[in-house]
Length: 246
Image 1 (cartoon, one colour):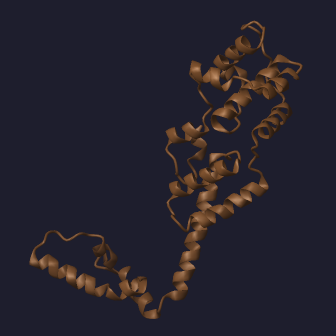
Image 2 (image 1 turned 45 degrees about the vertical axis):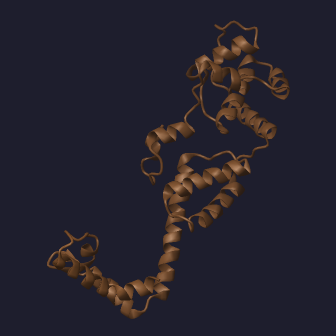
Image 3 (image 1 turned 90 degrees about the vertical axis):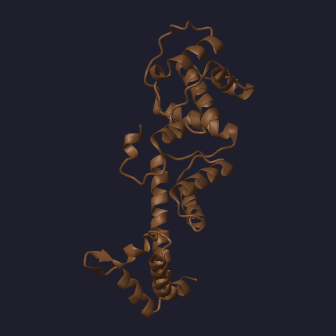
């Protein structure tokens, strides 16, 4: 599942992606909990004419309760869940043959009913626009991709919006970081005096194979008088930049 995300910004590890977006895998106790039906859910289930559509609805309800999102799957991929539902909610034989595939339209209509039951909404065009706007506000607090991602997930949960695909959130985070970088760069460009620009440019001049900025990244070798004097000279040379940064 995770291969499709490799060409985008890396936010989560593979196991973290699977934990959020992977199809739920229930223990026996979890299966009994998530596939129990409220009276409203049972009424909807009983209105379907075929066992396939009834079972599909219960599966979608259970998975939504577990992760508040919808999944693409076939019955033969979730056999343990199907067998449990057949035994718990129907008088059908556990060996009942279920036809594949289910019509996509049926699946979509069921998802709309589930959203209505639980007071959630899909992440459609309006919600995605609002999510992008929210990201632009969050990134001013921290530009760490994981912070941005987690804050957006939290926002979606508070708004009761179904979490969109990982690739979409990757794009949102990437675009937001790019826009924020551009915004900050423009502010800096407008604020810097020519003398400061010249000083910064000098840090990136290659002298005898060494950039001046490289020296700033190294800690002193020890606390000898020679090294301490070098540190003093270095700090004095950066005093102008320090004041500008403040």
